[in-house]
Length: 89
Image (cartoon, rainbow, N blue to C red; front, side, top):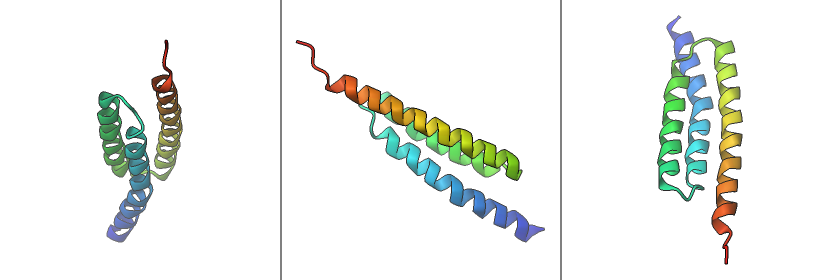
């Protein structure tokens, strides 16, 4: 029983760590310091919450939602970067 718990915990950790790192990497792409800080903390919170999920089905759904959110964040960072680079004369 205990070994199953540790296996699940380490498995979740190995999945959640790259997602947290991806969020922190994406946060660096924002020019707005508030957005950088928000998504850095968001990545930490996503990681912590993901480690508390014990049900495999719920964990899979959670990671799929987070992956979709990361794609949306990436698009938002790209849009912000494009608008930041535009100079209006």
